[in-house]
Image 1 (cartoon, rainbow, N blue to C red):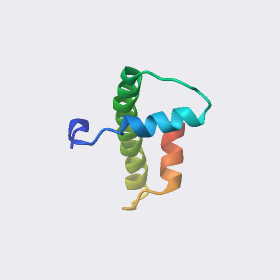
Image 2: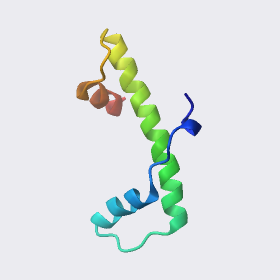
Image 3: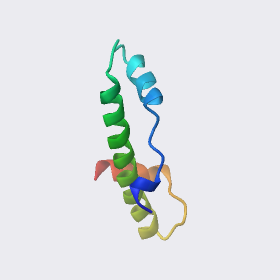
Length: 72
């Protein structure tokens, strides 16, 4: 599966997170850019977490797998 087949994280959700930080304004082009790059980042993170899971001979990704992937 390629990242092109995956849904993009909706810019509206990204905007909501940004506004919760106290930032007042963000452009639509910035939201679109962040949306695409966040998807790429999450795909990379999940693939790394899955490698950790497989190395441990498990089938279900755990929080520990994701935490380890974040540190790598």
